[in-house]
Length: 114
Length: 112
Image (cartoon, rainbow over all chains, first blue to last red; front, side, top):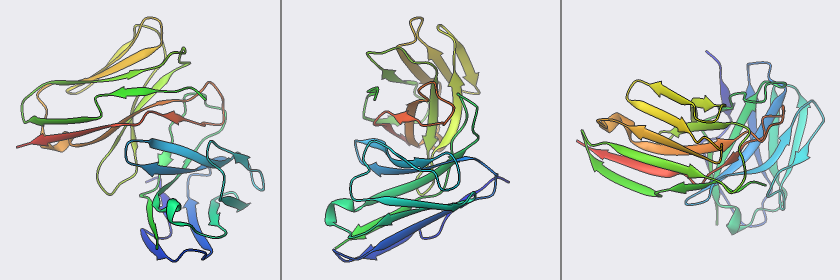
């Protein structure tokens, strides 16, 4: 069974802390994504990666960075968490070269910044 | 970035009723996907529509792509409590990187 696994389902952090959200996929997918989900706003793309060590900004990259050292792992980093980064974070992966390709999502990481 | 407008934002209905959810854009879609997200889970792909005027059926769900490829609808017949969830339309944008743009979603609650 194909799987995208996010390391933490729930996190509570304080303002100014550094936060790591990790995501691992076992499908040998080239593309990986980090989305943020907020009520009434749908899913908004933060960053994506189409190859190891490659990264591209999405629609809302400010305050975030990413790391992709291995094909199966894509990490989202909040260098200094702020309260407006309280949200649900979703990782996803897909096969490259398929324009209508399916995105496979993890279960999400709900982050609360106090 | 293409804007996708979904309506309604909320739907609360009784088991057995029919419903339709809409997804619209001012631009032409290259193709369109519909996802369902159940509470505590990530979104899961339901269908991809590609050709203008296309109709696809998935059990009690019927998906339609507008002739001009600027709108799509999802119709559920005889809704059941198991249909409860967030329904999202998404535009793949015509690239091979799989970078989707999502609508804001429709939250459907089906009461027994």
